Image (cartoon, rainbow, N blue to C red; front, top):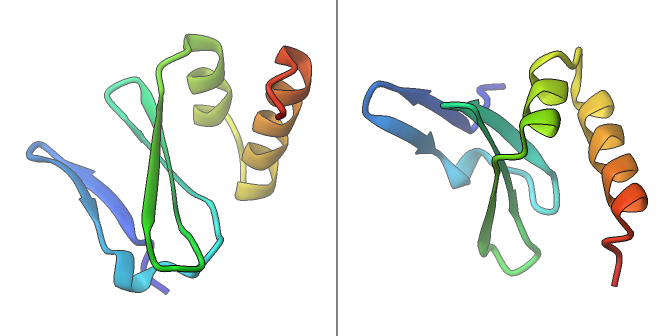
Length: 82
């Protein structure tokens, strides 16, 4: 399956029609991490992360599970839950 998020010199390219609902996608672009997901109502949600430590961890990660763990640990450490 083709990954729904890519980039080139012109910027980010998102293909929401290729995205599964409620699945987190990520993409590193210009020292930022973009987190994207399509919710149950087909709304596209996008978050941009510039924190250097998080960006570097995502760049060095091996798979999607590892990336999700990075963010789960960050949320817990920073007490960001509702």
